[in-house]
Image (cartoon, each protein chain N blue to C red):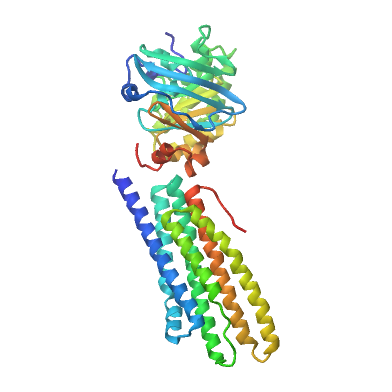
Length: 294
Length: 219
């Protein structure tokens, strides 16, 4: 399989990760899907997900979830470990295809096109639905080449001037240009953790995605670097749809417009973030966000 | 888990402090309204001089709320509770000020030494206002929004009584123009009692917000 800009090293799990195993274990109790309360659907969706179920072998990790991702919104996914939020996130750009025992049913559409249709090539799909991971994972290449890799393999530029422009624009939009413009040939791995994560975000946006998936993008960062990434998320929302998985309730409250609460493989509640964090509809949501369990 | 234990402990402590403040304020209103009908200079001075207790407790509760907000960043019902406490705390302090105001009016009225004039009968209004305050506090203790909403219904009676008092006092001043100060102080008692009723309504509104999560305003 070819390495793409959005396929960083840890994007290719060949075995079930600990979290997947935990989800599979907890899913033994799944029976019928709980009804989702709130507002899972929107008027102008960028992505639509209907009756998504995910199985690891014969274990069910996600139970008939349906939700939309709107244009220009940040959708936060929260829930206790093993609730299925990362598994669900990985359904949105078919990252679960890389897990041998994983089976996904249901329908995920991006701009009206079923991304699980056999005719869909996952490489351009993952350019349209980019991903940023928990740990910053720059390629072992220069800062310049980290950004250039995606546009090159997707044939987005005709010459070096165009490529240079994409690199500068991507780094500016990721808020990293001023810090690295004089050392573009230095290795990306030599940057600080926060800078590396912004480099990964710059790498993702260099291929002009429509949706960016973020799987706990700040969990390895200090508060200053976290604040910069959160500012960046707010900025990026003007052009992209962003789906972010986070364990930080405060982060979900700060960056998102809608919040989805997952519990044991069910999508319990989706609603406007200010509503979910002041007056949630479901008792499970209330109990989780107030720290009564989880 | 320690964090969560501490948080729950802090919320429980805050709840107890607010209820303690509520009981002090309720008692002050009971005593001060009783003074209207039966003046007692010692009790009057005690009400006036003990206001610092409520002021100190109000500051302490506000500091606790700010500390919890800063350290625990509460959400959902916990957030609503803290917001409700901040606002109810303020209302309680102002109600206690009204108890002092009533005591000062009663003291002024007593100084006129008017044995020739019948005291204006505030007992129906006092009874209603104390009932409103009690219900608002009970609704807070029991997180009972239905009970809180009954407080709204009582406010009209209090407003009507105040208006009637205004008309009565106008007539009394006409009939006794030599002592306007006496009558104005009497009317101000109605104003103070009415303000207590308004603040009981405000507390009830916060209880509805705390329980139901919807901001309610009774006009």
